Amino acid sequence: MTGFKTTLLTATALTMLTGAALADNNKAYIHQGSTGNEATITQQGAGNNQAGKSAQPGGAIDQGADAGIGSYNKLTIDQNGQNLKVGTLGNYVTDHSNLGGAGVDQYGNANVANVTQTGSDNSVGSILQTGAASGTATGNTLTITQSNNGNNIDYVGQKYQTVANGATGANNASLNFSGQNNGTSGLSGVASYYGASVSVDGVNSPNGVWQIGANNATDLTVSGNKNSFAIRQFGQSNQASNLTIEGNSNSLGISQDGVANKATVATLANGSNSNSVGVIQYNNRNQADVNVRGSYNQALAYQSGDENASIHNISGDSNNVYSYQGGNKNKINGNITGDSNFSHSNQYGTENIATLSITGNSNYSGFNQYGSDNVIDNSINGNNNNLWSYQSGSKNSSTTSVIGNSNRLYTSQSGNSNIINASIAGDRNNSGYSFSNTIITSKQTSEGLYFGPGNIIQNGGYTKGNEVNLTVSSSDNLFTTYQSGNGNKIDGSIGGSGKNQAFVAQIGNSNLTNFVQNGSGNALAVVQK
Picture 1 (cartoon, helix red, strand yellow):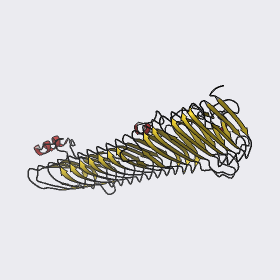
Picture 2 (picture 1 turned 120 degrees about the horizontal axis):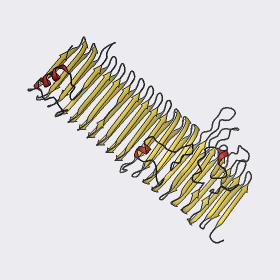
Picture 3 (picture 1 turned 90 degrees about the vertical axis):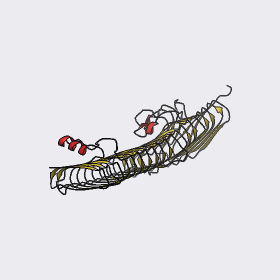
Picture 4 (picture 1 turned 60 degrees about the vertical axis):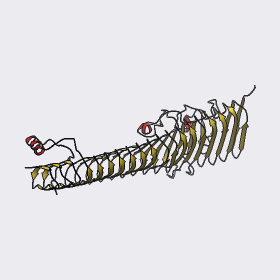
């Protein structure tokens, strides 16, 4: 047999096995039972070498399965070439007993697996590390390094099982990639929108890593272009916190399901373009931090549960940020610096806080809040900005400051004790969108109350009442304020050279309007009932 070698190795505890192959089409299968084993596989050559790919009896690579508790085993795989394979692609199982002799299996506690692939078109198929259901709960460690182009992680998992005393092990996965077209396909577009699409129920996702348990950690470093990766964590107090992406058109999806999980995307470096990041968190006390620097980047953070926090900082051009939260005590804090940025945020529940600051041109900002005790703070400094805020509930507060040209403003509150403070300095806000006097188009067509540009609307007010404070300084601004309920108050001041237009409507009891317009050619219509 020329150019083809098959190595089948079986060993017991406290044994070191080393298999080295320097040609093509090599295959290595290792079985080590019990505890304290160490295996090193080195394969070099042009390509088509395999480590633990066969599904034959005793095939693949497994450590610690015989004792049912195997611990302190170490596996090192070093491959150099092309079309190299570790484990079996398409072997999507989440349980040690279902591997069926395929893939790479470490069963027990404190096991270590190091996989290094240097070359192109290489793949890591199925690797499964499972903490044993008895004995001391100590987590397993997995490190994967792939360099060059067209490499792929198919389905890699770490899982703990609670031991008799209720302790759990903390697994750690460290992933390092450099090159282009790694992952080969999948994700993209805000990282497939809902984060990591890697599945633990038999559905394939390219470059997927999953962890089940508590206090697990995944570190990811990506350098290169057109790479895609997915991280999925189940349990509590898991972290995907050391995530660094440098390059263009990379796609990263993160999904966490559990309590007190944390995800941080630390870098989309300067000069890195067209990257997509999706972070999804379910359940309680989760936190997601996303920092993006570069051009044409996308970022999505979705959270469902209580006491969530979503923080994202973006610096660059044409960035898109979406953030959704569901539950109580949520917080969104976003800072965007650049041009043509788009941001949209939703919060559901009580005691939500949302703060956004945008500096740049042609920016758009949104916000929806539903519940009680919500606070929104919007600040935009730039040109052609469009800002809107909506709150529904009681004790809401909205503060908006816009400095720039041709800005539009829409703010709506529904509920009790709402307060809006808006301060706008700029030119031609809402100009050309409607009105044009005739005493505000005959009092909005004789109190049909058609709302025009600028729109600040409040509904409700049974405890304290709604309040609007508006200060606009410049020319050619158009604004509408509408209040419906009890104890409402409007203070409006518009400065500039003149030709400002404003419409004020108060429908309810104990309403008060104070409005000042500076300059000449201004128009004001007030309706109180």
